[in-house]
Each structure stands twice: as C-alpha cells, then as structure tokens.
Image 1 (cartoon, rainbow, N blue to C red):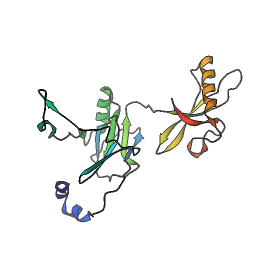
Image 2 (cartoon, helix red, strand yellow):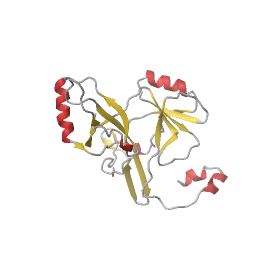
Image 3 (tube, helix red, strand yellow):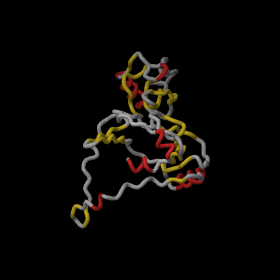
Image 4 (cartoon, rainbow, N blue to C red):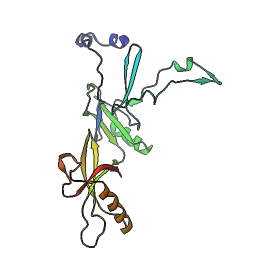
Length: 226
C-alpha cells in the first residue's frame, strides 16, 4: 500500500488521512443503461458474471465477505500451483492480471462484445470515487435485455379462465422488491391450476413489493424465483 501512496501526486497525498479500517464497506453497484457512448473520461471493460468478494486485510488476518456479508474464507481456501507434478511456490508469485479495458470507442467496444457473445460491458467514470451504493458513475451496457424476475403475487382469473389471471413479477434492487409488471400468457389449464395451488400455500395479506404495489392481488409469503 505504501507504494500506491508514493505513486500519488503530492496534492493527493496531502488529502489522505489515517483512519481505522471499517468492518464493512458496501460494494459499489452499476446502473443499467441503454446508452452507447464514447468519452475519454470513461473506461470500458468486459462485464463478467461472478460473485462479488470484498477482502478486508489486517496484519495477520483476512476477512472475505460477499455482497450480502456472507463469509467466504471457506469458499476460497488455500491455493496450490503445480509444475510437472510438484508444488511450485514460484508459480504463485505472479499477480492476477487486470481486466483489459479501453479509454474510448465505447460504441465500437459494445458492438464487438455483442458479436462475441459477451453479456456486455461495464463503463466506469475514471475519476469517480468508490461509493458503497448503486451509482451512475458505473454503467452496465448489456447486449441483451434480460433480468431475473421474482414472482411476488397473482391476480384472480376472469371469465372462463382457471387458476389465476397473471403473475405479479418484480426484481431485487438494494434490498427492495421492485414491481416489474404482470405476466399471464403461455400457460395451459393444468399449469394454471397447479400454480394456483402452490401460490395459495404462500399467500399473505401484505404485498412484498416496495411501496405496496400489487395490493389488488394475493401476495405470496415468500419469494419464488421464476
């Protein structure tokens, strides 16, 4: 860390202050956008699917925590490298490489990413501070508009339809279940009846959606991934 501090300009070093290491720092999250743009003030890198891991390192102790503050030390245990069947400490000395990024040509990089079948890119404002929340200084530029949805409730059927009218769907955002609308097509009669039975077992009077959305429907007691 001293090498990093020494590399800073003098005025930047003067603004630094000593403080105790925090017990927790929420990870910075990116904001989904449809924009495609280029700017010398932004860097663009491949969007990787994986688990966020925050490392808190003190002398003689390391804590690894997930985005939800789950301990990960057991998930990432000791590392061993082999060379011709023997353990090799030397092979562990190289640092992990930094993800390749570009400082411009954002639109072209997105097009290349989509042609290669990537999920998309992450755009980061180069001079932005790391903040423990979702920020417009980090942007998700996705090649396809896919989102994992949660079923949070259902509506009553109308007319001759059986089972339910539509499923109320939502998505998680910073601990809230945000209403994403209704989905009621593509079910045969047997599926409608089967899902209705399962939904009724999970029914509760309160809406699980932020702001009480979906109050006209029977909201489920626990979330069910769709």
